[in-house]
Amino acid sequence: MSIRRRMIEYSRGNDLDRFWRLYRWQKKRESGFLHDVLTFLMSRCAYRHGGYIGPDAVIKGRPTLPHGLQGIFISRYATVGENCWIYQNVTIGEVKRKAPVIGDSCLIGAGAVLVGGIRIGDRVKIGAGAVVSTDVPDDCTVVSQPARIFPTSNLFSET
Image 1 (cartoon, rainbow, N blue to C red):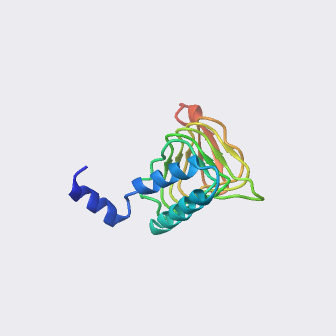
Image 2: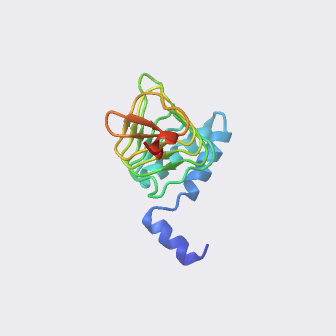
Image 3: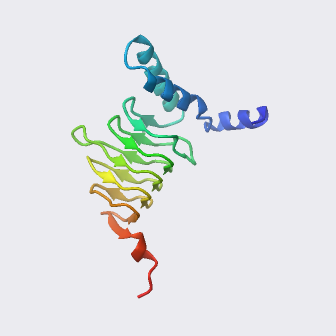
């Protein structure tokens, strides 16, 4: 990446490389002073980018954040699978220390809210503004408030 491109990405707040490096380093440290310092730096970096990712959150791989961390809140108890797309202002929250477990290759639309100890299956699409508080099976689309779940196989079938 050219220096010019890096400067543009950094000025927009989209330069999340440092954040993900801090996240991975922090996960490798079990405890101790270095773990605490890395947690502090990671939190400050997330705050600078306008979001929050809990220090104990489990994020497999590196999610795609098209709008950066703008308004994204991920609970410290949450688990996010690989190859997920998370748009702006998404809340992955907890209820009584139980947070969602999100499968691989999911898409979470802007402003969606996922709360409680629920499981989101693999390859699930959650529409913008949806409020999800129940389990969602694999290969489904979730829209509306309250959440309505549509299996992908029925979504495009002819009647």
